[in-house]
Length: 477
Image (cartoon, rainbow, N blue to C red; front, side):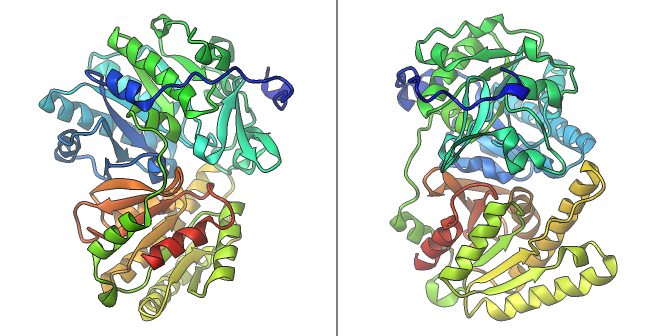
């Protein structure tokens, strides 16, 4: 199958029966395994996990703190999806070097995951190349790159080597989706082997990609991964979590036998690799305890929702929130933000309006819904960074004056900038998801925002009601 001949699966043919793999089997296999460090190109990779540390800075001391926690892994927020290629590669190298220094001090061996978007946007293979260069330079060369972009909770599966988006009317090849038209990270191929060749500019040939089928996974006939060498790319089908856990067991066995892999992974692989299974959303009781620990209801302002994502789903979610409840909306005009002469006054006025309104009710800070792009991918990315920085600046002004009951940030680059620049979160814990398998709740462990519930909400997940549902849960806590 090629990118030009992608077809929908033949539903008249039954898939092989699922080979059930309990998360406990993975946890047992993790004994003595490399500790996982997830370099997350935006904060939304934490949506499927719970009770893991997150770092937004990567000093050796910060990484040592994460390694000293009794967890099978941790996240480092890189925000590289917002960076130009050279800067993204440099940041990956810097973080990897710091991780290796910290690991040496703590006597730990690491496995590196480059967490990428489940709709295939981001810097690939640049980021895994950068990690492989650092590891080779430190005497630990990489044998292969495992590509597993599945995000099963959000309906992103891989079948017959093709990546699909589950929709109400069936499965859509990812290259036929709006995400493939991304101004910076667009692509043409849905078959992952073809996508690898496309994104590598032909350096990595589709004929050399090792494709692991669903039949092999479910019949336990995956060829030993120790045949992988010289950075060969591996892609694997994944329809349910058991498929990924079966793959992880083979990966761990190969690594213990001496094969060294780096991962380019979506959220579902990360969850499996740390030995966790899908769990329900945070309960109302847990949420109430987290919200009330931040500040008593009587003394706190209302919540702050920040929307930077421009995908159609986010726009529909904002419209549905407007239908379901009243709030003060402050819209930043993107055209004005990128005009230096008009930007300063707009940002000052937006912050003041929010400060004046948040004691009385929910405040929503959003960008204008018309997407503004540049003449090419680099110019479009520069505009995205500028807009996100402006949103973070307004948020910083709001937080300096008032302490919201909660903060929700919608969009990958937006949620990263809000966490690091506006809320100044250095270390945090992922407490779980607000909705089953999607929308991550963080609790800052240090800094001025410690205790404020922070919700990382990807632009491309959920249904039309999801944003309103999350807001309602937090407001009722």
